[in-house]
Length: 326
Image 1: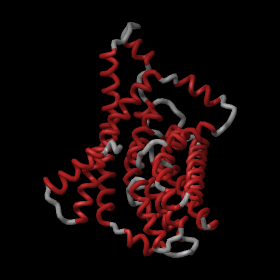
Image 2 (image 1 turned 180 degrees about the vertical axis):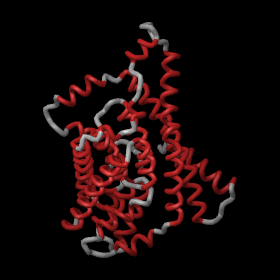
Image 3 (image 1 turned 180 degrees about the horizontal axis):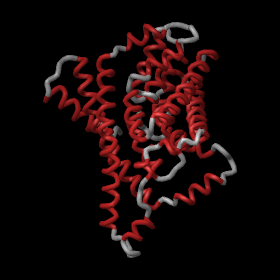
Image 4 (image 1 turned 120 degrees about the horizontal axis):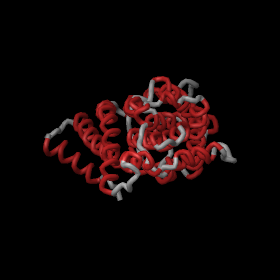
């Protein structure tokens, strides 16, 4: 069941019935904008509210001690990447949960492993890939995607860039602090609900202008950039085609479900599988709309590190599939 189907129906009604748009390009643009603004806006509020509750009870010090004394280094990054596999979000939609992880005190590198894996390796790559590219490609793609996400998270953590996160997302009231402010008395549930709501709305309001900007740009690109434009420049076996595919995919914006048919069309036109996958992974992981929203949570230094590390990982995946020709 598609939980976002009512939003899709509403977007169709507003675009084609209320506005009466008949032009295909403008219709796709407006429809995409309405659908994604509502979907991401609702996700923003719901996820931030849930994370406000988690932050309230979250044993930050205990979790940090567990992570710092872990016996198997890297297992937490793999778990975060695997969590990304089961969250059906595009890059923009996964950002609220990423912000929630940060504000809950989860290490920066672990949150980045999730942020990269969520759009990169999800239900689409698990259930749609086999019918198009075969089981072998599906398994290898998912293993590589999880490994790249985990390694990228480890590198970000090694760079010790926690101070480059917007401090507004690291300020939250724990259960202990709220009880102290209430003179040590038990907090009624009604008051907790208000505290959590204010916390969620505060973070959501600070991010939403970037959501509007990012989705607006993504909608224009979605409506006016044809598939043939991309295929023309990627149908080659030269070494620079994989980086070019990554660059061409970055300005676009789509989730993995909607971009997989594009990848199928590209491979059908002779584009190498690794090149097509590099294009897809850049589109769902490094989209400019998503980066604009992410910029609200961090400064340019950390955002640049994220872009560089993720881009290298995407190109490694592209070259891997092109060299071994699966």
